[in-house]
Length: 283
Ligand SMILES: C[S@@+](CC[C@H](N)C(=O)[O-])C[C@H]1O[C@@H](n2cnc3c(N)ncnc32)[C@H](O)[C@@H]1O
Image 1 (cartoon, rainbow, N blue to C red):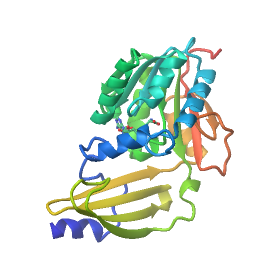
Image 2 (tube, protein in one colour; image 1 turned 45 degrees about the vertical axis):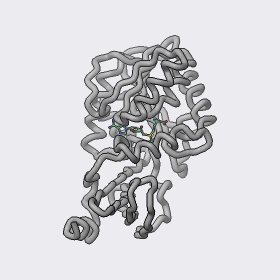
Image 3 (cartoon, rainbow, N blue to C red; image 1 turned 60 degrees about the vertical axis):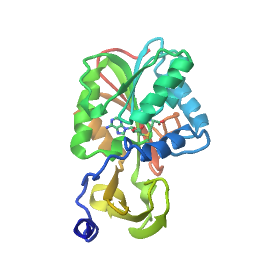
Image 4 (tube, helix red, strand yellow; image 1 turned 60 degrees about the horizontal axis):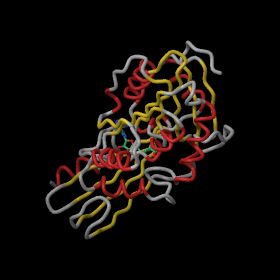
C-alpha cells in the first residue's frame, strides 16, 4: 500500500491521468453529491435552483420547445433541469451515469407525473442519429474530459442533433483559477464526504498552465484502501472553444457569459456556447 501511495504522490500526475475509482457513481460519494444537487441554495453539483429556473427560461427563449421539442440533457443528475425543461414544454430525455441520481430522477418524475425518459449511461457512448432538437451539457462538465473524449463527444452530439439542432454548454475560462497557486494539504475524518470509514484525505491542487488545465486531486486513505480521485478541468478561451465546436461540424456559434444568457465578457470566469448544426433556419 505504501508503494501505491509513494508512486502517486511523489510526482505531479500526467495530464488526464484517470482516477483509480468511480466518483459520481460511487456508492458512498454519490450520497453526498445527491444531497448537493438537491439543496436549492447551493452552487454545488447543480447550481442554486433559482439560477436553474432562470437558465431554463432563457434556453426556452432561444430554442423554443414549439420549434425545438426534443431535448436531451447530458449529465442530468437527479433531474433538476430536466423537470423544469419538461414544465417549459420540451419532450425530455435525461442521461447520467450516477445510478443514485438517475434512480432519484425516475422516482421524482413518476411522483410528479412527468413522462421524462431517464437513461443510466455514460454519455460518451451515445449513438443517436438526428434524434434531438436541443442537447444540453450544463455546469462545466465539458472541461472535465480529456481532449480526445471531448472530441469524440462533440462528434456524437453533432450526429445526435437534427439538422438545425442546437447544442448548449458552459465551461470555465482560465480566469476561474487565476492567482490560485499549487498547494497540498491534508485532514483526518471519522466519516465524511469521501468515505464512511475513518480516513485521511491528501488534497493537491496542480496547475498545467501550458494547456490551461488544472487538477484537483484527493487521495483517500482508509485502513484497507488508497484511492485517487483526479478531478481535471480544462478551461477555455473563446477561440479554443470555437475551434473545437467548428471541428465537430458546428457552423453557427454564439457566446454568452453564462447559461442564463448573461453577456459574454472576455474577462469573465465562465462562458456559455450555443452551437447550431447546419440545416434549418432559426425562427
Ligand atoms: C456537475 S453535475 C451537473 C448536473 C446537471 N447538469 C446540473 O447542472 O444540474 C455533473 C453530472 O454529470 C454526470 N456525468 C459526468 N460525466 C458523465 C458521463 N461521462 N456520462 C454520464 N453522466 C456523466 C454526473 O454523474 C453528474 O450528475
